[in-house]
Length: 345
Image 1: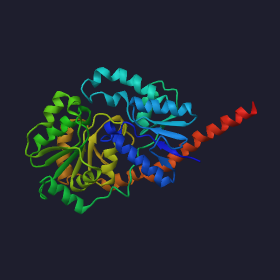
Image 2 (image 1 turned 30 degrees about the vertical axis):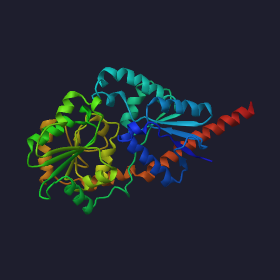
Image 3 (image 1 turned 60 degrees about the vertical axis):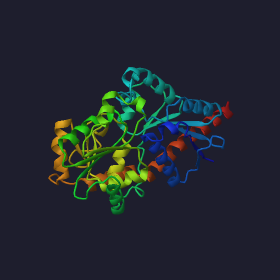
Image 4 (image 1 turned 90 degrees about the vertical axis):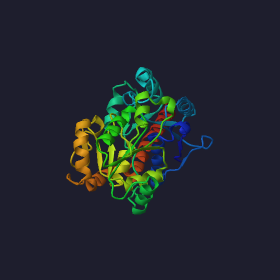
């Protein structure tokens, strides 16, 4: 009987990141698909699913394979999105690539969120199959709420008459935090608020300086719960996500599901998926952002949230659960075929 171990080692470090949110989505997807799972390695299981690239996850995968179990490794990280992140990340990018390649190849199959990240991983010379499958979104949970919007604005002293621009992510350059601060400087008539956090030792000096920028219309409150973030999506007029590199960006799915207008950057992962002027608005840099941002907020550009919601429905938790079930069935079928061949020898 199929049972999956959702290994959660390393979640003390990754729990506040997109990887932590992805694991929550995987659990919901398995529940929706009726697939039994556990977080306890001491229980019986026949497939282990790994999400981090910490040494304990690699060891868990190797141990599971020695016990004859199948290993699904999620490729959330690439060398490309490791760059321009934490202090020293550019110097360590080559080593990081070799390490994640070692981790991912310990799996029987590698799942990565988008066709773009799959193309990147396939250039690494991986010997295992790479499958593109979204992290998914629980559409039943992510719904706009007037009460939530009021809670958010009350909590952060945001007047109902003011337009609010929301940002979410680690305090790293790759997330576009410098552009976010620059837009707050250019548009004092709007309120800008960014949720997220990063251990201070890992924050590059220029990002630390940006986060400490003193403006009456700019706030960096730190990390908040999923429920508080849903309130923020409900109470914001624009989700501004000027990220420079992503493998998907779960917060993008969340904003689309919450029907919050989106302004993001032209980057490869969103090509062929998020169309400028149809589902989201996209800019190439600060001048584009400075032009588009007030036009979106003041209603001079069409509101695209209905079309964005229709698109994000393709990544619903239900569909992701069914896709995972198909991957598991294929892995277990390989085991049965191998066993049958051995019996024939």
